[in-house]
Amino acid sequence: MLVIGEFKKLEKIVTNPSSFSLLLRLISKVPNRRSILMIKVVSFKICPFVQRVTALLEAKEIPYEIEYISLKDKPGWFLEISPNGQVPLLITDSGVALFESDAIVEYIEDEFGPLQDKLSNEEKAVQRAWSYLGTKHYLMQCGTMSSKDKATFDERAGKLQLVFQKAEKQLTGDTRFFDSNELGKVDVAWLPLLHRAAIIKEKSGFDFLCGLPKLQAWQHAVLETGYALKSVSSDFVERFSDFYLKNTYLGEGKDVATSQCGSSSCCG
Ligand SMILES: N[C@@H](CCC(=O)N[C@@H](CS)C(=O)NCC(=O)O)C(=O)O
Image 1: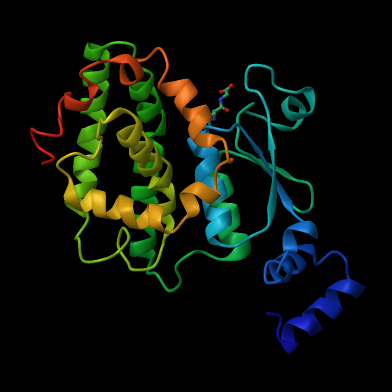
Image 2: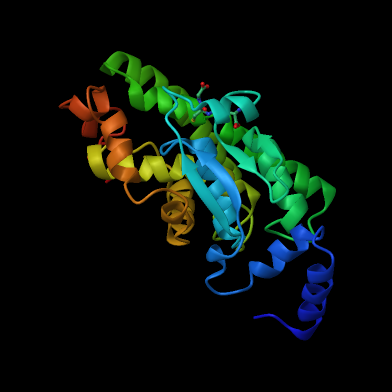
């Protein structure tokens, strides 16, 4: 709800259209604001780097519109404004195209405030480091899920599970999320990994988080926020399954559910 002070700010903006970002912040408090003014995210439907950005926008309740492109046939306008030719690309309210999800996340935090306030520099650095560790493994998870045969899958999954084990060791189990009962930067950075692990478990029986109870509890808490679903398109699971569960070991392998962390061997 807008309070009186905010109406005064709004009045100031009306007479000074350059204060656009302040207007966006105010608009984010207005119901049905999506129809008013939005920043734009250029996306590919199953890209985890995009999802970390859209999950943060969702968690911060920042209005945005999304445009999906084909990465096999990138449109000319996109190549024109995207220096790395990759998604996500975020076009700010003043029309500046931002690329690289780390930079985009920092921009959102600078512009709209971080998810958690009052962190010490040390805490912020630890959170940044754990966020990088998560995002650095998106491609490893994609590669693992794309594996065509058991040997390749086992080798890749084994490497990924080492990272999940590190996270298990870091989690205290005393907080709902990574290091707090409030959703934070690390939770959003790991959300795509945890979301994909949940879909793979549901569809194939293979559990990336097998034998890691604190990570499983964290996954549950992150998914329970609803931001995983809100940050992807309504046909995400279908698109994701088409890509990773067809002509892959995960999709076709008869022994997937009992591979490595089989349900009877270590997950109970
Ligand atoms: N370092 C980039 C990685 C983004 C990325 O790899 N995006 C993939 C889709 S998930 C992409 O656009 N690939 C197309 C290409 O590289 O041509 C970031 O953090 O934004």
